Every structure is written in structure tokens, then in C-alpha cells.
Image (cartoon, rainbow, N blue to C red):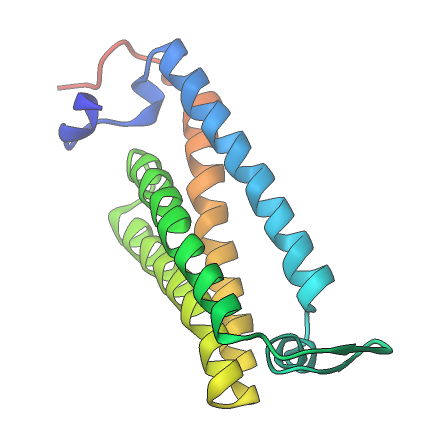
Length: 171
């Protein structure tokens, strides 16, 4: 972790065993993202109407769904805020150690965080304020997908497909 304190540190300079550890984490994060997509699009639904009925209750594909309770929303928010906060922290740190331009990094880090924050608050707004906040939920999912995909794919590219494999960064 000490290497991250150097502003010139890039993942492409990491030793093989470090790249293997980071790659393992990134692949596990990718599995988490795929299962998140399966849940979002299969269980909740990819349209504002399906998202609203998931949280507010109503008919969903021939079945009746009950509104999410306060307790259910608290449990999901509690778990996701801690876990996704840690995942965001680790992925964003790995992402910062890529050779992407600083403005692109800043933009993607902001989009990823905004998507994550919207994903945490969206269900509450949908359930207790208005069904139209399901559009915010969709936009938040998109922000998460854009940001977190970059957080995973850019470090993988940097570690395994950048061919300037020097022992240490140039002075």
C-alpha cells in the first residue's frame, strides 16, 4: 500500500504477485457486478414502471408485489452503504493508479460515486416521495455501471496489456 503514496505510482509497474492479487480482487468485483446486473434487470426490472412497482408495490408481470417496508429499505441501505463504500474505496484507488488522464479519472470517479449515492437514496425517494424517482434510479444504475466498469477494466488493462514493463517508474 505504501506504493500508492507516490504520486507517480502506476499499476503497470507493480510486481507480478501484486498484479495477481489485484486481478483476483477485480475479477471477484466483476462477478459482483454481473450478479448485481442480474438482480437489477431480472428481479427489479429495466423500466421505470417496473422499478416503481418493485418499491411501491403493484402488478408486476402478472404477479402482485407488496411495497417495500421501512425495515426492508433500512436493511438494504445499511448493508449496501458499508459494503459498496468499501468496494468503491478499493476500486477507485486501483483506478487512480492507471495512466488515464487526470480529468478522465476525476470524471469517472465522480460518476461512479454519484451513481452509488443515487442508488442508495433512489429506493427511498421512489417508495416515499414519487414513482417518477425511478428515472433517477435508472440514471444511478447507469452511473454505477459506467464508473465501476472503468474501475475494473482500466486497472486490468493497465496491469496486463500495457507493455512498458519497467522495474520502477521513470524518474
